[in-house]
Length: 291
Image (cartoon, rainbow, N blue to C red; front, side):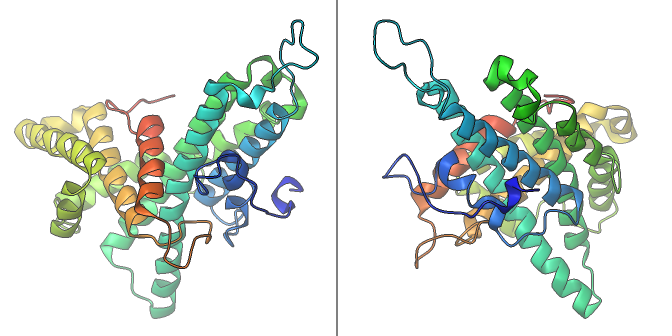
């Protein structure tokens, strides 16, 4: 709890990439005005970022082998640590943007007492993507931090398994995945929304995921009822659709989940860096059951 209340301030280590560093994001994404206690997806992504910040602070003080030099390099200067944590920060930021935008629309829907099927789909995606990728982020941090992850002060031990618990809270993730597939089959949501398809075709990452989504959907059509017995196929379709919607939301966002940005919004180049990290870490097919 106290880790979430640390005042945010901008201290990036890459002067040319203001929105692309663990140092910046870990100190700001937790202060997006998103109450991380009120639903599993917001809590899990926020908790994962809190752990990320803790590991980054430790890596900045951990001195490595100095040899004959008076002082050895710090752990956070190692390419795999720096690059890995940067990718984690960016990837989680992309997910948080989608969650934040969906939350705003849900608020309007509650006020107007109107819940379109597309919004139901988005809330299902928030649930299974936010919690699943939060668990994956914790696993990545454990691997990167090595033996330090075994110590209680790292926060990566038993308490971090709360992220696993959120995957089953308020609706198991598999049920959420099947829900969005069911809505497409029953015609409640469009199988290939024209606007989403057109926008995805304009981005390299979007085209790659769209190709997979189309191929998997075509296979499901050929199999007919037999597709219901292919769990991996169903999971791939659900996640491919989720990735398309999440990336589309991020590209359309001016400031992202943190609410930080220039007067003209976040640059296209910065967004491309974030999407590249998201794709590198989280877009995997066949979709893994566990990371």
